[in-house]
Length: 306
Image (cartoon, rainbow, N blue to C red; front, side):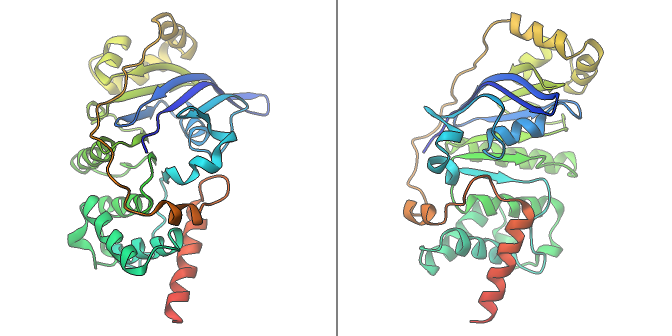
């Protein structure tokens, strides 16, 4: 399933403070959209509103034709969320992490199918050669790919990646960005939050927030032209120098901007049966890292007692 995501006037407040103010844009299947901005810009708040964690106080989040928060049962298993924090049990191997994840999330799938799916996902995130190495011995980039693999076990149509390249050197960051592009080209809508600007030319579009205001959304090269800079790192100085209101007005005056959908190949059959996915549909918001780790540890203990 290919799912476009649209924000219409999304506004989020905490008490008397507005954290995100009337943000509107579309994200298309097949693209990687990077959400960035200075600290406190509202990136994480917008992320949570888009992925079903926290409903906005005003405005709408649409998945396809449906409002997300009134149709969440239909879409919750189509959403993959990779948190910034590590959720891995470091005594396990990458294969074991994915296998136990499959046992938890796809309880009706035959064991041989779960094992095969775990190996398929390891290949997808380019970790087949590290299949049986303890997580504690993996590099930072490899651990991040295992975290991503956990979400890919249920073949989500929309992926949210929270600071997925933090702490990585530029070469590893570039490799991760290439992986995100590959996942998007399979028909997924991929969101990435990031502070890093070195490889933004590898994403399809960038969305810039400042003080909760939408100041730009469009192709990376267009962002450089809009702010009148040569390097992405200089955009932050422009944002803070002239202020969010100025750039939000400038962007609004530039007219509607939607670069349109990205061409993707015809969708392939899903790896996991839909019935198995639905059987383990989690209620409400995506689970926290602590909740996922607790479930994984409980499943490991059950396996030991067999």
